Length: 265
Image (cartoon, rainbow, N blue to C red; front, top):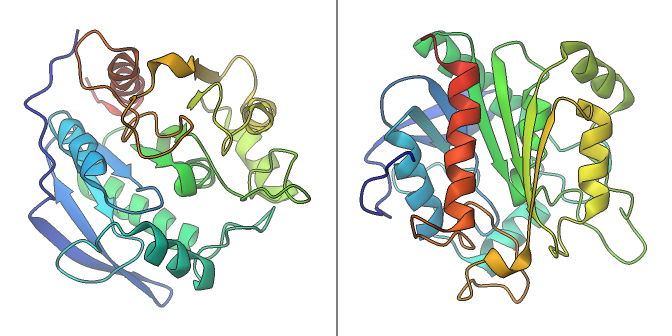
């Protein structure tokens, strides 16, 4: 079993500002080795996000962009305030069924910069919740070789809207993705009301049943002290930090998936 250091929730010290097409955000960086772009959830860069980021940095060069801020310090993970930021943002489209917003173009440029800097077969990308489907959009580019989508939550669903598991991709983008014949990994809890089975059905149709490495986890394996009433955040708030936990085992599988597709060795 892959070993991890002591859980560390301290944000990365190193950071830089990245601009593309008029969009500017801070990017926090740590680690050595193949490149991985880790995209945070809503409500933002929580302690559990930084725990995951630090674990990944033991194996990879990790870029962690702050999609809510431009400052030298990460934007505080405030659920209400950051949800409002996302709602009024021109960069992120929470409800659009076939367009995630300009932020994905910025993220694609950042992934390209990471690959140009690190080299190797390609880079890995991990999207979660609000950014879950972003991982698939980033994989339209040849320098992304290992997309991981964890509990993809957009487009946001209402009782009368987005019930079909949309992926925020146009028909042309879906064709481009299929032409790449690339593997993708997906994780969700079985009872997650924000990422239902319909969304993974859509991902499977996009990626192909033989290429979609699908992991649906029984709800009993969630963190009982998680912030939501229902299970949701597989790799962060609902991950149980114990060597024999199912969710930590899934993190090990994520690392294996990434290594197999972005390492030169």
